[in-house]
Length: 104
Image (tube, rainbow, N blue to C red; front, side, top):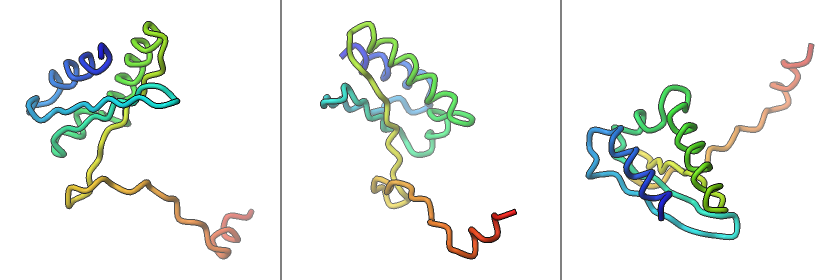
């Protein structure tokens, strides 16, 4: 639980509404997954410019995981506008005419 407590402490220091920070910890065959939920208005603070803050948090969590001989990963929960979890982003397949446009 060291990883969960660490993440909560850091994120609560970053956001303006620390009472809305929730970290869920699950373990599966791939290791530990920490799911971070914050107020949607503060998502930008947690992710950072070009994902730098989230990337730094993931790096620190992996260091903690290595210390404890486990793999730790971070997932930032992103609800849609109605509060439901967002669907995985799918790339739209290219139409044949789009592919022809790409040819030199």
